[in-house]
Length: 380
Image (cartoon, rainbow, N blue to C red; front, side, top):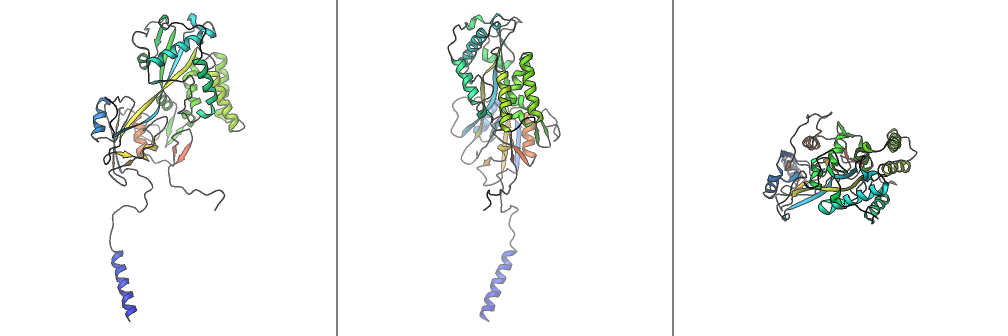
């Protein structure tokens, strides 16, 4: 009888416990994804104050210049920003011979690098921030050795008539060096690689096509192929057609085709990528009001799906309100077919879209956006 009474009390206790209602949260948290994301356009000169006051968690853009050294609660990530290209006017006397052309390119590259600390001297279009750099590292090192070698005759920079192809390149040359006229020897151009990559890609229901636009060899093609001579240009087009049509035997054959394309593009000193710049984007790491666990894309920085799916707010163990500032106004249509094509739109789509696969943050491949069951090999 006592055993029955005890069992009845336990049963009653379990019944009461089962009636207790909890919150809406699930017992499994697949990510730190915040349940509210605020994106607003912020001028670069106002972003520093907003970051320090914890009014925004991160600022996405390359124009932020801190007034001094970053305070302890402000950290930064670095991603690829732009490439710097030097081109010799075909009508210039410096373009007559290969030796003279290479000497001029070498002199201009060194001058730009010495006057602009943010320019990293790297005379090869594929950088260490590209996922396929490992396939080109020997070619890149050889190109760097050639650029840094002593030339028998190196022209004086002040004797050259230099032209800036765009406003950012004018900053590299300085106002006293930029020639506005048509009579020029050297043209310097700074190309935003994230914008170039975005212009070559289309977002269709979360898919980025072609994914090769994220690779260094294809970006080298986009930067250099227009000014390539007819013969080399035809060889590049033939190799590009083989890659795009899958007319190669195996991955090694494809890599060799990619190397051949870049080798042809950089085979002439009359047009050469001489360096690149990096972009620093800042975020707040304050003890309670900041963020942590920040992942980013090596090519697009914080404006990427991987950032929004990894960043963790310190104020909340899970979820919370993420506040982001961006330096670009929305200009594109907001639709998942061909819209979300500007910087603001891409960040918006990364926050509201939920594709099965995301771009890998370090190369042109894909990664799963879901919890997936991975089978051990061999099975255990």
